[in-house]
Image (cartoon, rainbow, N blue to C red; front, side, top):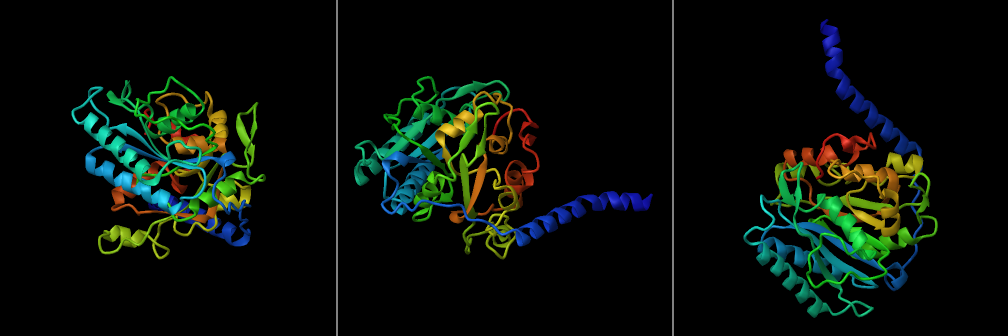
Length: 356
C-alpha cells in the first residue's frame, strides 16, 4: 500500500521530468529552421500597412499617461513605413454602465493621443498616425457586471471588424477614424517593450510568400503558412527594484520558459509554434478562421483555442521584452491560461464559463 501511495505521489513530477527530457531531446536532435523573411529596407510599404495596438484598461490618469508615453516609444523605435499606433481600451468592470471618473480618464487618453499626433505629424497617407479606440461597457450576465464585451478577445475581434467596415461594434466616438487597408495587426501587452526594427522584421516575415496563410474553406483552418506569428519574449534584467522571484526567474540563468526560446519542439517538429499572447496576425485570415466558432462567454483561454485554427508560428529571431512576474501568484495565474503549461489541449480553454 505504501508503495502505491509513493508511486501516485511521484507520478506528477515524473511525468513533468519525462516531458522536459523529451522536449530537450527533440530540440537537440532536430535542426531548427528560421522562417524566411522579406527585407523591408524602407520600412513597411502601403500594401502591407500595419497597426500596432496595445489593449488596456483605463484605470486612472497616471496609468493613461504612462501608456501614452510607451506608445510614443514604440513609434520612435519603429518610425519608418506605413504604420499606425493605437490604444485599444475598456473601462474597468463596474456595477453600473457609467462610473464617476470615466469621462476624465477617457478625456486624458484623447488628449494624449492628440498630443502625439501634433508632435509627430500625420501618417504617410495623411491620416492620423496615433489612434484611440475605446469601448463602452455592456452587461455580462455570467459575470454579473458591466464590462467590455469579451475582454481582450472582444477588443481584437471588434477591432478587426471595425477595420473591415463594421458599424455595429461597441466602440464609442473618440474622433478616431479606422484607417483603410490595414493588412496586419501587431498586438502587445501594456508592459511589452518593442525594440528598434522589430516591426519591420515581423511584417517582413509575415509577408513572405512561403509564410502567407492559406485557409481551407471547408474546415475553416489555416492549412499552409501562418495567420499569426509570435516573437520571442525575454524578460529584461529586473535590477535593484526587482523582487527576489524576478531575479530568480528572469534571464537565461533563471527558469523563465521564454528566455531560452531559440528553439521550440512544436515549431521544429510540425512547423507550428505555441499559442501566442502577443505578436502579429493577418486580419482577414484571423477573422475567417474564427468566424462563428467562438461561443460568447465560454472561453477562459482564448489564445489557446484560437491558435488551433490560426496556425501560429514562432519567430525566435525577433525579440520583444516584457518584465517577469513580480511574485509566484502572478506567474501561476499567467501559466494557468497561457504558455507551454497550457499547450497540451486545444480545447482546454472551454473548461470554465466566462472570458478573460
